[in-house]
Amino acid sequence: MSDTARHPEQGVPDQHAGGPPHEPLGEQEHPTHHHSGHDDSPEGIRKEVRRYLIVFGMLAILTIITVAIAQLHLPTWKAVTLALAVATVKGSLVAAFFMHLVSERKLIYGVLVLTVFFFGVLMWGPWHHRADAAKSWPGYDVNASKPATSQTASPEPGH
Amino acid sequence: MDDGHTLVAGHDAHSAHSHEIEIPFTVHARPDTGLYNGKLGIWLFLASEVMLFGALFSTLVLLRTSAPVWPHGWQILNVPLATLNTFVLIASSVTVILAWANLRLGELKKAKIFLLLTLLCGFGFMIIKTIEYTTKFSHHQYPSTNNFFGTYFVLTGLHGLHVLGGMIVFAYLLMTADKWYATKRDQFTNRVEVTGLYWHFVDLVWIFLFPILYLL
Image (cartoon, rainbow over all chains, first blue to last red; front, side, top):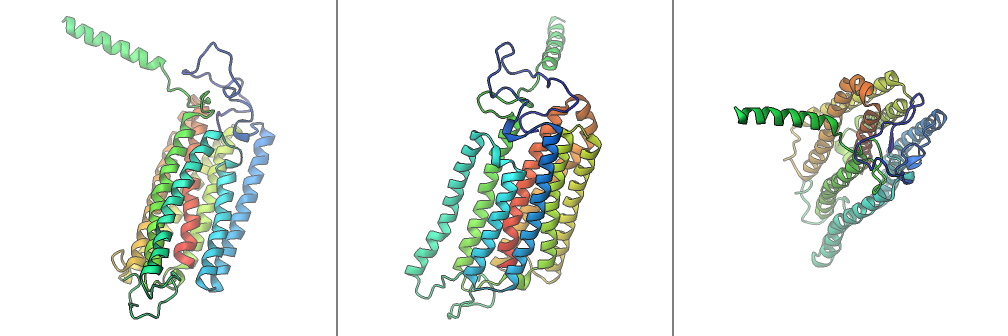
C-alpha cells in the first residue's frame, strides 16, 4: 500500500533492514498510519473503493460527453478547447484519485512541478513556431486543421 | 589448493552475507523522502515518460499547425472502436486499484481476480487496436502514407507498447502472487501499487490521445 502495506490480521509490519534500527522512529518513519492520506483500516479501504467506483462512473460519463461534443462538429478551436478541457478533467480525476495525488508526499509534488514545467517548454516550441510562421509566411493558415484554400493546399494531408 | 579454498570460503561468505542483507525501503518509507523507494522510482520514471510522450505531442502540434491541410480524425479513424477502447482502459484502471485495495484487506484471491481482469482488459485493448491497424493496412494506410498517419501510428504504437509492457508485468505479478504473498506480503502489495501507478499513467495518456487523434 502507499508507504507500507499492512493487513488487518497482521500485527507490527515487517522490520526492514536499512533504517537505523535502534533510533526512535521519526514521524515519517512510522509507516503504519495514514501515509499519503490512506486510512488502512478495513472501513477506510472500503470507503476508498467506493470513491474509486464513483470516479470510474464520472470518467465513463465524461467519455460519452467527449464523443457527443465531437458529433457537433464545432469550429476547430472551439472543438480543440472543449475536447482538451474535458480530457484535462478526466486526466485530473485519474491523477488525483487513482494515482493518489490528492494526498501525496511533497517530494512527488516537486518532481511533478518540474515535469509540468518542462512539458510546458515542449509545448511552447510549436506554439512559438506557429506565431512566428504566421508573421513570416504570408498565407499561413493559423487555424490548425481548418482546410486551407490557399494554392499550397495538397490533396494529401501533411504534404 | 589454498586458492581454491579461499575461493570456496569467499563464495560461502558471500552467500551468507547476501542472505542477511535485504534491499532497504521496499516497504517502509525512507526517512528523508517519506516514501518507499519503489514509489519514488516509479514517479521519476513516469516523469521521464511525460517527456517522451510530450515530445511526440509537441511534434503532432507542430506538424498539424504547419500543414496546409489536415484531416479530422473522425473522418478517417474508427471512433466507435476507440471509444470502446477508452472504456476498456478506464475499467482496467479500476480493476488494478481494486486488486491493490483487496491486497490491503488481506483478500489475495479477490486481488488475483482483479489482476486477471486487468490483464484481460489489456488483451482486449490490444485486440481492438490490432483490428484498427489491420483495417488501416488493408486500405494501404501506413505510417509513410502522410503526416497524419505517421503521427497516428507512432503515438498509438508507442502507447500500445506501453500497454503490452504493463500486461507483461501483470502476468508476472499474477504468476508469482502466491509466492510473494506468502513470504513478502507488504512488498508484493507495494509492487502492485507501483505497477498500478504506471498503468494509470498509460490510461491518462490515452485519455488525451483519444480526442486529439480521433475526435478533432
